Image (cartoon, rainbow, N blue to C red; front, side, top):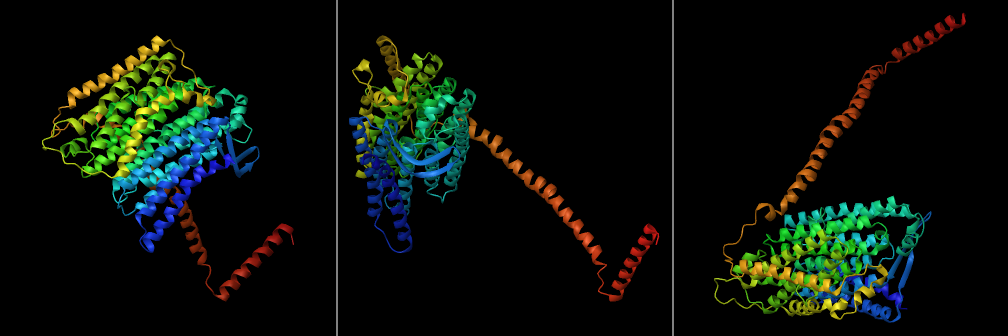
Amino acid sequence: MTSNLIIWIILAPLFGAILNTGLYFYHIKEREIPQRLFSLIGTISPMIAFVFTLILFLDMKETGNTYTQDLYTWLSVGNMHISMKLLADNLSIFMSMFITFVGSLIHVYAVGYMDKDKAFGKFFAYFNLFLASMLILVLADNPIILFVGWEGVGVCSYLLIKFYHGKKENVQAANKAFIVNRVGDFGYILGLITLFFAVGQGDLSFSSLEANIGNASNELLLLSGVLLFVGAMGKSAQIPLHTWLPDAMAGPTPISALIHAATMVTAGIYMVARFHFLYEGIEGVGIYIAYVGAASALFAAVIACKQQDIKKILAYSTMSQLGYMFIGVGLGYYSSGLFHVFTHAFFKAMLFMGAGGIIIASHHYQNIFKIAQHRVNLPIISTTFLIGVIAISGIPPFSGFFSKDAILASAFAEGEYLIWAVGMFTAFLTAFYMFRMYFILFVAPNKNVGSPYVYTSKTITIPLAILALGAIGAGFFNLPTILGGDHFIDNWLIQLNSKVLHMSHLTEWILMFLSVAVASAGIFVAYKKYANFDVFNPEKEDGLIGNKFYIDEIYDVVFVKSLQRLSVFIDKTVDTKIIDGFIMGTCNQFILVGKKVAKLQTANVRFYAAFMLLGMSSIFVYLFITLGL
């Protein structure tokens, strides 16, 4: 009976999407539908999914069982069998728990943020479908069904990024996200095909792949691991497939929170962890993943230091934090990487939601200096925003400290000192740019005497308060032994065969102290520079860093413009002049021959009789000469 709950975790938000879609079309064609009905369906459906997930979690915690639900056979060709089958194991339920919980809070927040929007119902239909797609992704029993959810979140992100499609830049941002992700998805498909041929048997379920992985050649496994990671790079915005993420901020803030906190961008981390049995045997690829993560973390942090758009600062911080997660899973510390996914969901959702509240209150300004110039009094949002900034900066006892420190310690323990050093410097930059943003928004002097108080809807402030508790306390779910913890998350995810941290307590204490010292140094530098900054004379967003190292411009020249030129060449030269020229030239010759032959068609009976006589005479002459008649 318990296994039957798995499908309902997905169906709850899926039915919400279907109902809201139907009501929305009825609303625009027939008569007015109360906004309250859309919000009721849109918020209750993810909550129901959370309740079902919680029931499964408690049952699994008590019994230690793993559940599957086989719905039907989707495809059976030769020795390839694909079942529409769902899996509730420790990893999928761990992901589903915070996806549904944080997702529910973001849905509640969206009620206040999207209030009185003309397309309110359509937004919640897309929003519910987005959550359902992510749940398909994490609850899939095989990588084909995982890919269905993988593509589902891609399509929903496209629809939501261009939600305000009246602006050209929003549509361009959505197209960019969709196209860049297709590059990664192509890598995922090729990796999956390679893995299938490498294993060569079974039903393609994760358990079957794991059981038969020993039959495959190392070369094919290596190729498959690299290609699958290309898919993860696209979905989780790692170098070089990262350019879509900052532009995705064109969508409404609730979708930014959902993409960055609990869904889409974490899919790449989840996928690498789900294929842990593959990456365990090809450690070289794991090291490569860790280095890409470290480079992405540093790269994004450097760019964030010069950004002025509040949502883009948070977007680059997401890319940077995802880099930390890839360091963890790449080095084989899967539970540490997923622990950071867990804590990050709370403080990043809260930061984005707080940013949305600030944007609404400041007449939809997104430039941090403009917001500071028109500062308003937002006590709840400013407090929760500070909690989020402290958490992401890695200051104890907030959650970000414990998860980030576990990843940095794993890099040090593995002897990857360059990765550890990059991670430490990135931690300094994270504290710097996050507190730079906070000091400009809430602390720097303002010429306006007495900032006016702006009331904020409870549907915005209550989710923020709940997430603030998570940002403070979520780290205690996986406290290290040195701090009296029992590694609950590490033990819960024991199926992943994560590496265990082996180092002396003294080394652990020193690493913790260095981590806090580095973060504190970043805060101090930000305070000295921005606590008394003149917000009416903002910094210039220019130069190499301000222009994001011109990566977009380079891609535009190397890929976009070159493909355009190639397309024009194929159209104007290859297609028009060569292919069409050959075909039309041949046709013209046939037409010319036809015209000449047509001259023989005179419709004169005597002319035709003369031709017949000439022909018959020619035959008789031939017979006379050849046969001697």
